Image (tube, rainbow, N blue to C red; front, top):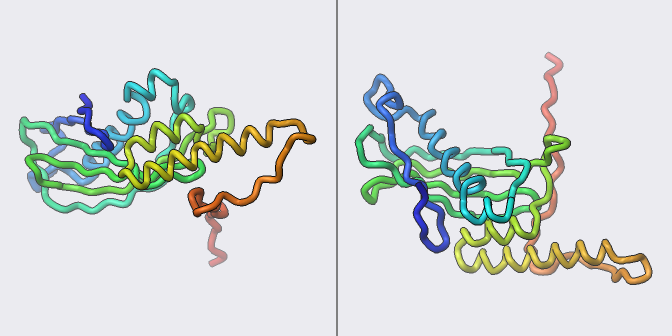
Length: 192
C-alpha cells in the first residue's frame, strides 16, 4: 500500500519471518528486495503511471548503491520504503530509497532505473509524460529543471518532425539540464 505525500512515494512493506538470517536480523539481500518492491510500486502501480500507461515495456535496474545504516529486525509493524527522484537522464532516473521504521532509517540506496524498449530489450529515451511524472517526486528546484527539460525535449522532437523547409537549427540545451550521453561500457576478457 502506498502513502500519498508531496514530492515522495512511500510504500508500506511488511517484513517476514523468512527474511531473518542466522544473526537474527533481516538479511541484507532481502533489503535489496524492499528497494525493488518500492521501485516497482512507483513505476508500475502508481495511479498516474497506470492511468497514463507509462513505462509500457517496463524498466531495467542498472545500478544499486547501498548503505546499510542499522540492523533491522522482524516486527509486525511494516517498513516505510520512501522514494525520491534525485536526477533524470536521457533514459534513466536516479532514485533515492530510504527504508525506515519508527523514524529510524535502516538502509539508504541510490538506484538507477532505465526505461526499457520492448523490441530491443535495451534502454530508450524517457517520454515527456514519463519525465513529468518522475519530476513530481523530485525536490522542488530539481523538479522545475526536470519539467523544463521535458518541455525542451518535446520542443526538439517537434522541430525534428517538421518538414525540412520549416526546421530551425536547434543548438545545445542551455543550463546543462540534459546530461551528455556517456559511451557504453563494455566488458573485455583478460588476455592472461
